[in-house]
Image (tube, rainbow, N blue to C red; front, side, top):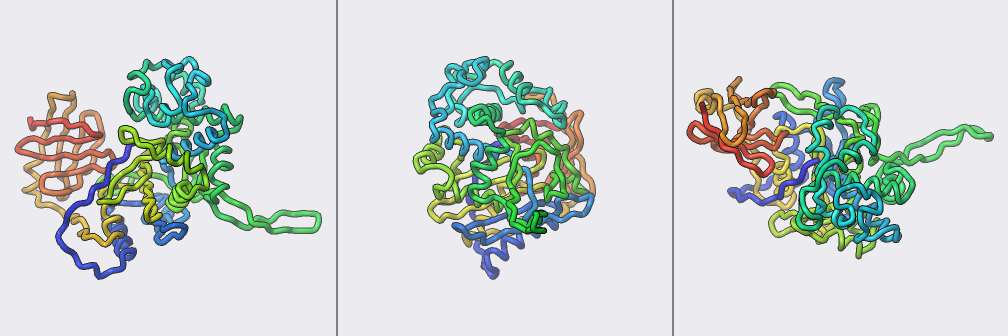
Length: 456
């Protein structure tokens, strides 16, 4: 459940497009998959029409179950956009307003009398992020947590800042909004999602279902949701996928969180096709009124009401990104062309932002040479190996070489592979790490922060 990076167009040398753009997009994703850089699925929709929809890799590596276009993945923080839509629907139903204060529902949370629904939707509350700040969750991510227990944890924190004074992303805000949805409707978040969004725009399939009646067997078409929130563990028999990280040799299954923790801030399971259908329906007026949509699109310090605007050249897309376990997802919609795309990876060993740049560059027939994955000369790599320390954080990182590839290992942690990007820059996409080497040093970039390391 992490924030998304902005997309920028890179300038490349001229390139002759001998292939159809969708064939070339397919070639790019196959190329990444074959080089153990990507597993997942991509959908591109033009208006109501799906023009590209394909999966790559496996839903279950151990059981050799390949992913297909119906495979369902956890979408992380894109769930927030679904939650925001339901909040706007309740506002339209006059159950509350954007100015309604949090103390109406949870008066014990610090500054509840000052925090509005507007503040919660825009991450302007000062409420601490329970997922990333409370160590008890990281010690028991696989255990069920009741909403009451999580709300107690959220209530126990002191505010980070005065409500409304600035933006700071916090999963607590949308966890609270999910609880408010349940309080106002007296129905579960799962049921609200199903009836308010999933059934309304048919995010699912229709399958034959036979029932015995007094007149004999009767077969009807039954709606089976492919977008939903459930607390149960992943079940590949239900077309669901595990997530993986690459250890340099194999795809290794990621640790699975209990979905009660993510809840309305990041717990939805879906498909890229469903996500593009959802955002098209949202902008087409099928889920909220034009006024509500305009309010959702109001960007303040980079964030709307669970919508982010990001550029690709002169185009401005609306959407959201997500990350949970080792699933990484992105949803974008360009209103002028009614074009939407969604990519969900259940295994990435390459920066997803760069993959998206490649997809959009090819889609818009812009030059985009495929990245080169090659074994580097051991002598060259030897320049980077060694143990590095930083005066800025109490952490040492050892860089080593194995079979023409670099690996890094921080104090007390497991080793992770470093993928060559350019010149002296290497990345570990799964954790958003970039390491830029200099003479007996490197700069570690992660999450918008920079740390200087020097070789001992």
